[in-house]
Amino acid sequence: MLTIALPKGRLADQTLDLMEKAGYDVSAARDKSRKLILEDKDAGLRFILSKPSDVPTYVEYGAADIGVVGKDTLLEEGRQLYEVLDLGLGKCRMCVAGPAELKDKLDEIPNKRVGTKYPNITRNYFEGVRNESVEIIKLNGSVELAPLTGLAEVIVDIVESGRTLYENGLDVLETVADISARLVVNRVSMKMKEEEIKPMIARLKVALAEEHSGEIH
Ligand code: PRP
Image (cartoon, rainbow, N blue to C red; front, side):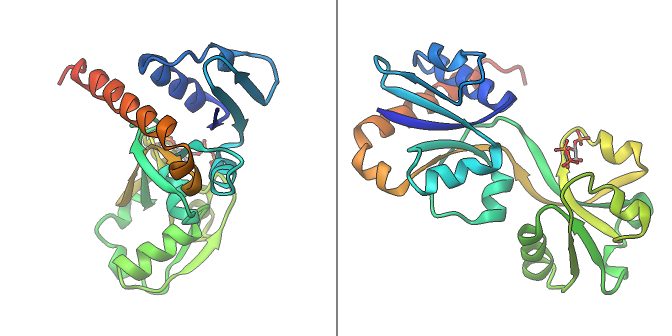
């Protein structure tokens, strides 16, 4: 039996679609009730539906063998897990953003304040990549408000369509990382349940390759 932690919401459905393409019977997990654990003994699969940011916790502690989690969460939290596959779902970018007039002028602002939900990613980027120390202001959402209110000069946040930035007169200043959902595996499970996990990774890879070969370029 494999326990798979899925992030509640659209990403869970997209992951199930992919598993179905890979030949798994995931009908048990399509249950639209409020049940949080969905099990199919015959298929040998148990799905747990958790808050997206909690998926790595369930997998790291072995409460789940496998999980689906955004690269943003993995970069921010630096968990003890194996990241085995880029599922190509939920694609977006982690960016430094701010008023459009700051484009190409980031270096000109000394002692910047940076608003973000991702303090570790922000610190690693500014200190590690830009070799600059900044004041990080931790926020919990609607981060775009920070430069609009003077709380911070810039933000580090997820940009998907770019619409939130655009509608608030902000723009991408630099890209920090490309983000997408990743398949992660508990370190012990990888050894103890190798005969179930390895074929699953291989089948998902084939399903992903088939999807891509059908794309129009
Ligand atoms: C995310 C992110 C941006 C927005 C980007 O916020 O923090 O605000 O989506 O998407 P876009 O580029 O397509 O406009 P989320 O909806 O998760 O809410 P939050 O602001 O409360 O974090």
